[in-house]
Image (cartoon, rainbow, N blue to C red; front, side, top):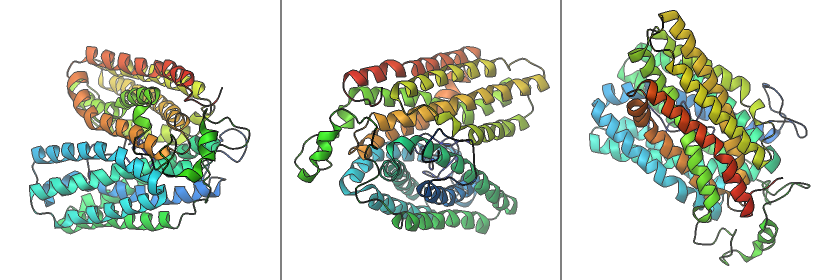
Length: 472
């Protein structure tokens, strides 16, 4: 149950509450989450050495435990308690996903204008009220309207949260910090899902309502914790001494007193700089293509196992366990060396090739004896997990490196919108074009993932020629 790229701590649901933190993004995003002060990223450890990352980890844990709880009961709550049909639920989740994609960009701009923390607190508080509001829904139109609101504020919060990380974490530690938060996210989702299993076992309206309301309460706690989070007045996002900033950033910071002058890099301008940044938009699209791996894991693998292989159905649960354990063990280590944009791009290239290999291995499970097929499927998912942690580490680095230090809200909003769009359409693409086409479908998906990863290198070189990428 890996987390979405879009945010580390929160991700859009494939099943469950619209906007709830969930697997794959399991996000991105969420989503939707480090190393010591000096030196390379260490292996997994219980407590992070950076006090700020520890605070963020505590907030992330509260958020994702609540979200894992709602994810476990979401589908049954909507269908058995609210009385929605499968078609109504699917339509509502699709509409909510569209609203989530649309909300990311304006939310990011709001963070640049009014500050990431206050905007994030408001969005999470609204999310708490919206989640609790499901208990009062008694009609399909009301469900769709509320689901759209919840998804919009959730995806907006994912973009703003990533911008907040840029404010409170030094530039040279953001990616490793997010990797640690992503590990915490996986742990929190697992704990929440285990609690949700209790409600599933009880299988009653009060039990499902209690799970939904507990998730709403967790959002309120998270809003309070973010409100109390200390954000340095000058912002920790300024490039640390000795590190190269993006060409032109020094002049922008020096003009900070001219807020509202409309110059590039100032939060008061009307035009979104990320939408006019060709290299960044290309990286966003390539990252969105790499995010198809999450639909592959959550939708493609279960359908493939059940419909096209002899592997026992319990293999589906095994794939989620393998993925979760490998992400927890490897995500922090995968950030090593991604401080340089060209290296981060090469990491994405390797990730694309590994993901392509995982597609081919999964395809080979067709026609094999049950036990052998199960082993092959688990091997394919293990390769996917390796590709996942690399693609996430490289993608995070590029999303920050290609943004101006004063524009993280705008850039994270656009980047998160790309990831959210992929997570929304991914299940339909994988279930029809991949699983439906069998071996050819898996090969086609593998080629697409490999091409997306390898294209990151030329995209970053384009950014360097345009003066957009930092590092050597």
